[in-house]
Length: 483
Image (tube, rainbow, N blue to C red; front, side, top):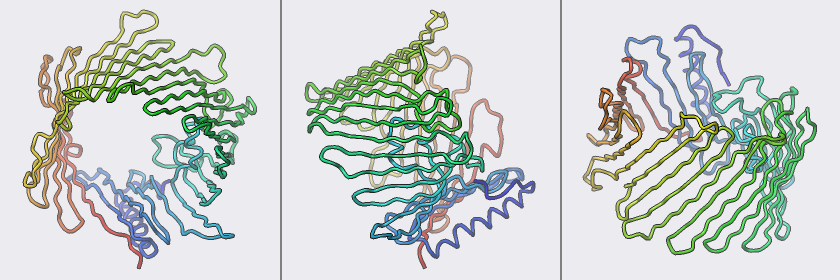
């Protein structure tokens, strides 16, 4: 959602940004409940006029409010002008017919029934921008009207984004049965997505066994209405847990626009068993393929894991996973050890082998050893150091065999702290510099609730750039309170 068009002059963009910030921050403080907000912006490096400063506003949602509440807001300055990438505003609750109706405008997720349904597509799981109404009580419902997110990495919604109307209702529980019907209808252009209706059903057969089902239909345009179904059984007895599920999605061939419905067929089974105190054995198996596609290749995944925490020298965890596809097979083995009494110390070994289905001589194999160290400085009230380190070894590598990452923070004075992290090649044979990356950051409190952060970054083998190596950022935290 762009609030301003492109501007050739940096002064023009900065002027619009300053006016927008005053409008967003100063004016709403007369109606907002008490909330904490933080503002930060990047200072342009000296001598670089073309650099664009980054301005960001984050508002922390208040727990209770009676008036208007700004749930979230992120404002950034881009080369084309100020841009809102996240905005949510909670409006006052109104009472109609004895029922309280809460409303919210801005960026928000669809009703919970769509997010938890295994039949939903990826476009439904992303946030939408629009207006929603919801109620509480014996039969709560949520109605949402807005635009779906254009993409996972899209920072704004365009005017051509699809508009949808979504409704989810939670019906009162009848004995051991619960029903959550839902309906999603795209409006506008013909490629706005698929109309989806469905109902989630959960039945408690006994205190240990539950059946979870989800049935529905989707209008896939070209293929007409396609049935959707998901059914699973969950059983729990003490330390034993078993779950199975079967999913049947809609054919993807008839879909246009955003994918509001899933298009995968899948069978899944998982289990967890605790035969002895401290010993846990788990397993997982699944098979998936495109829905309604004749002779479609399967993707099969299976894994087995064992965890035992009663050893005298700590907890040991081992996992073996194999994935079979039409073109390759991936075999991964992972072993992890956490000693007793040494918090933060972990040793992890991972071996991965990829084999092509055509017996190619270019099969890949890798081995990795990771060592996470606990805090290298003792924790005392008078200790101003906080230092941590991690080592990574790759026996299969022909260059750097051991790399390290060290991060820490040092309190210089009460209001001044210095932090940073570095990556080093401890053993290498290719003639590269041992120092790979070095980052240093300092925080200085210049006044109450205001701090200046200076950051310096060095990367081996990179062309030096003052704008990329040095960065200054000013941040301030304040309270939005009602007058």
